[in-house]
Image (cartoon, rainbow, N blue to C red; front, side):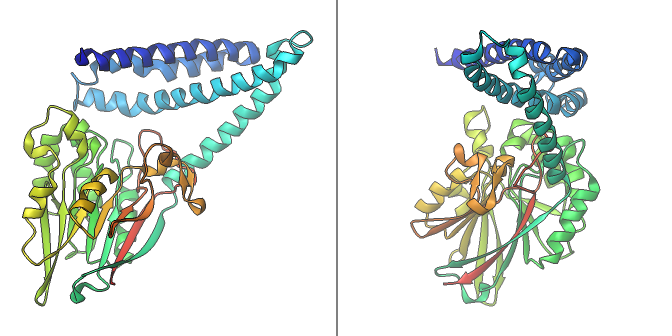
Length: 386
């Protein structure tokens, strides 16, 4: 019985969006009859990717799917968001129109508000496009930790996440991020997963993009859900063939200063738990901590903030994650993001049971190059002895 549940959900989703497509398409051509050609073009381009969905898994990792996803994925996802928002707009306008329905046709009543919404939406898209591709925010965080060895008081960790390196990722942008990391003068650079956008094909591009990081600075990474969704075995193989970035797969990295040690344990991503993945690919904090030498002070690097629950239970002083993107939409000053509607730990610093969690909102974007109020960031974490 449970095996058919995902198919039922998928069918309901498809039917829902098909219904919204019909509603929005008919409304747009009625409200804007002079823009019928444009509406039909947007409707066609926005729905082309549906034709590729049945082959998403059978063609996984192929160049054909990489090209289809790269070119048709963004307009498809953008159109889905537009369908949801414009449908909500139509509902509001319809409620306002009801008292005047005998005097004014709906299309005439909705014409001016629709123009305003569409123009405003276009301006927001341009602003979000610019924010996703041009600015780079540098965040400085000082975190006091109990029992931190004196030799590591002031230890500097640079953290990035969610680069989602893909076909349209500019190498110049990756090198810009590397130069920003160098400017922070870190002792170690951490990449909290989703370094490629599903396809293992882009691992060399990701590694080359970080080649500008100063020699002698270790770069450590963990898998994210998008590495798991793609071809995780090949991602691991290609990552380990590169000497510049060390992949922590339920393992730990240790640095010693004088007679004291600090370890960064890294776990695989929780997305592997819901898939037919081999045991070595599933997250295993216990195994990672076994790789921490006795007496070493442990920190945790993971992709998803949900790892924080196990970290608190294991009394780990600091967990560093990404994953949320801050929903790619939010207001940092109010500590509000779209992601916070769905997950409890979505951005910034948290504390629970004597353990700390820091969630970076990421340095890239997923599918659509859009970020509003959540510009890409690199983070410098400075450890302080409490």
